[in-house]
Length: 539
Image (cartoon, rainbow, N blue to C red; front, side):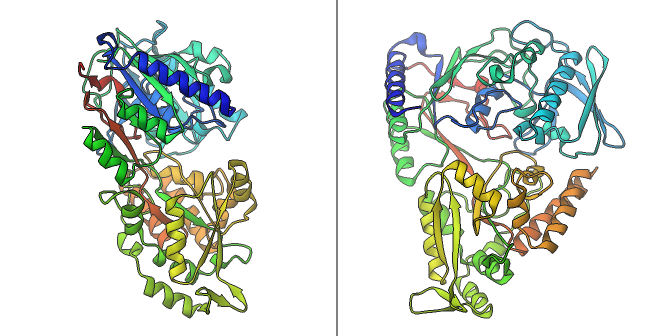
């Protein structure tokens, strides 16, 4: 959006929020105002199967529901639109027995035919566009069989131990059959019909969205405490990339929930708390914010000793407490702690600059007068591709590596340049992440057979480690018992740290500040809020 249009949108938004501010009238007291970070300008979609943006998932989770849900504390899969299920002995079929009291917001009945339409339509879409985000959740799916009006069997062509968890996610939420008669573009821009406690009244990219309550809603999962219609009448969502504008609206009482993408600073936390705000915080499931090395084609990080030194040279405690706050959790593994089968690796990730220096000395890299290490006339310089801009954390890591003699060049790129750089391998370090409450999600980053960037995935390992990692990914996805999955993913996490194929930087914590009048904010396993539970007190 051009700057002038963007400013106009912000001004219009501020006026709208002022007009319906909680302090202005009691008629608006059951409308919740959420101020999100900026909208996605390149992958715009609020279609569940296409959705990528975390903020869009918050919207969708309260409009469209799934066959199952996931307990945010235990990771266990629990009933939702399906009241029970059986898994075939060969793990290639999942038979779901559906609730019989559910309807879509357009009045259509939710039944086995609707489930088949949703899954088969998504499969057809993934066949045409394999890069669609939801395609990874549908891995192995072949077809659906309607056994009766309220019993459906989903059949896989190959085992996928993460499939049951996938049926709990926003990406495999079920839309009404009428939604699939529309184009993918129409669904992306908000033409979606779900079974949830809210209806999407409208969505305007880069500006906002409005959800309105379904008065007849009565079928939440056990994760929701409110078993009837939402307490709220409506939810107004605004996308505001400018931090000062977002914060100002919240502090003025014109936004009830302040929900940026990055965690709050110590200064902001103290300011919000002084105004009586509450901090809501949860680690997002999936990989931590990791750096991934390029070990191929003669790159300096092809030397395991150098990679191990780099691992020791990063002070993760300082990162968490300096960049964010004294209470911010220190990353302790490849995954965030909310991911099932997470294995802590804190001891292996301890800050040890002396150990780093010893490893570099042994590898033939010696400090020169400029403070950096050199070998055969070459300075130990690493190129780190970042987008869209360098952060305080990037500069901190740069300084930490400088102390042991490693030069880190921060190469700031546009999103398109960053993607191209990953594909071409023109980097020493890069970073990326995905969000899903199952360890299988790491395959979209680190398994060349399934990764968004096969080059990045291949470059991350030395050849022997790549073969081992792929074998462990295969064991994890074909396992039929929890202990088998735990063993496979535990060994994978050990491998990634022991080979220094992954450098965890920080726990991906999502935080929101809620106004004092907002009650009963709770997280789902996906790191999303259950808006039907939220209540707003009278001003």
